[in-house]
View (tube, chains in turn purple, orange, red):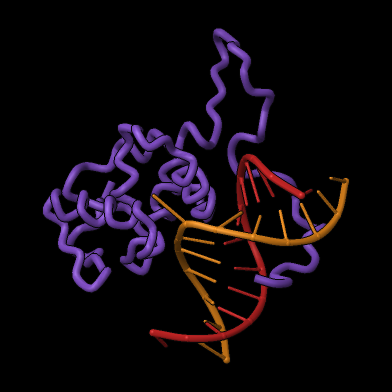
Length: 132
DNA sequence: ATTCTGACAAGTA
DNA sequence: CTACTTGCCAGAA
């Protein structure tokens, strides 16, 4: 993890969807949704017994190619969340968590409990990927 | 304001 | 399959 990027001064500011706006406000009418909010919605839509990739969730949240943001959001979820974070795996068909982390085992177990085969740390996307 | 760093992805070699 | 590059977004330095 050394010098990955060098110059990105040319990058235009967020043109994707919602730019960061002062949070904590309750504009009664114009309800802006943070990117994080849309990710929660997309996440909640994944049916049991199916999985989705980070990129897929990002796209559903109107954030094409922002898969990393999805990972960042999931990492912040409280332990008691109701959202099916365990149904999100990477495009390679594998769980992105460290096999050592406690969460890895939780995710694997939950998937198996839903009938998803996790063979050799891999999941067959052709068979279990959700097509929403 | 600028630079780094991720539970990532897709393209190229 | 591995290695490297570029794209995206947000939070931390």
